[in-house]
Length: 408
Ligand SMILES: CC(C)=CCC/C(C)=C/CC/C(C)=C/C=C/C(C)=C/C=C/C=C(C)/C=C/C=C(C)/C=C/C=C(C)/C=C/CC(C)(C)O
Ligand SMILES: C[S@@+](CC[C@H](N)C(=O)[O-])C[C@H]1O[C@@H](n2cnc3c(N)ncnc32)[C@H](O)[C@@H]1O
Image 1 (cartoon, helix red, strand yellow):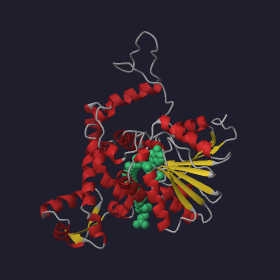
Image 2 (tube, protein in one colour):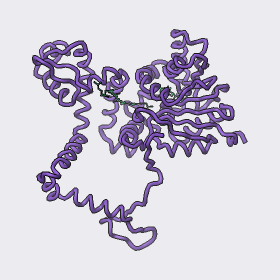
Image 3 (tube, helix red, strand yellow):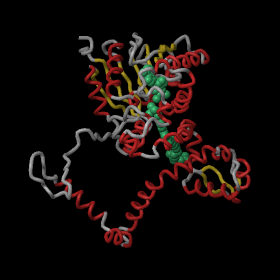
Image 4 (spheres, helix red, strand yellow):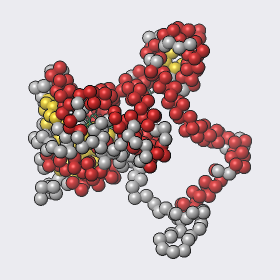
């Protein structure tokens, strides 16, 4: 089982306004725990300028001080680094040098940019390990640029970040709910939209293409964590253009597959199944899981990158509909980035939390929270399955238990 730290149900907190040791009289005030007091002591030392000066100069603490100052600087500069990456991707710099290193003049004419500006970008990209200096003043891929070449889905994500960063211009307005609908809300038009079933093809095509481009890295996680071989029929709810079903079908020759998505998305998936010769075993059905009954007959239902898009009430409606559609003993498989994954906390709790805020609905949830929601609608045996890269998606399975709380 993957290591997950649950933040739900955390420890006590103190509202003492002027320091940890102040215990105001009146109801509800509690003394800070020993742990809180130790952390308060640590904070006052770390924020003390004399201590910072001492730790930076003293030989034994200098490496730690440098490392921590560097990490803090990276946090300050993160947006600038992201924009350097964005410029490289937009100008297709990694593609330019993929077949062999080039010098700055050659790159300047291909990008195209003035030579000085090209050099500024090249130096920045080298410092971020996106590119690497090679012999005779040429530039080749760096380790990070090379990793990106193998992940076209990530490159597509980087390009669409232009909308995210625009929406995040005023994060406080976003948090207050004063920011108004931004670019991401328009890009994902089903978010908080009761009439999503009427969306035309041109409204769903851009996000469906982005999801298809990034789907291989997700299906890789799912297929390494779960085998579909023991199943007869898969229903992939919110299945996009059918990329996930195509990946599962390639591994399991006998599995029949049904995709359910908004009508315009399902049409696109149908075309794909025909084009790939999959239509004898895969069909796509259009509808809204918030308004329509789900197709019955599957013994496993998958929700890949679907739940985190929706607020709690809609998730409960969806989980109830899935529970209703499954036979007793049927399986639900959820794959999406979750909150509180040890070692990847900022991915769920900072990146996806703010991304979904800008998008206008949904939130990343912890495993504990998802387990509670699943249990409430009548699923049991809820398990978190180990995956190689939980930052991309965690995999959770649950089984419809004998007691069907929704049908009693
Ligand atoms: C043999 C040699 C030379 C070395 C051996 C040493 C070694 C192991 C080297 C490592 C080489 C290697 C295998 C590198 C692999 C790198 C990988 C796999 C990098 C992957 C990076 C993935 C990233 C950066 C993913 C980013 C994903 C993003 C930004 C996803 C965003 C998703 C969104 C916005 C989803 C939206 C959907 C919605 C709306 C929330 O529902
Ligand atoms: C983030 S995408 C994930 C697509 C795909 N599962 C993947 O991982 O590549 C969410 C999908 O849910 C679909 N969806 C959103 N609201 C829906 C609804 N009310 N009924 C059916 N599908 C819906 C969207 O059209 C979209 O294809």
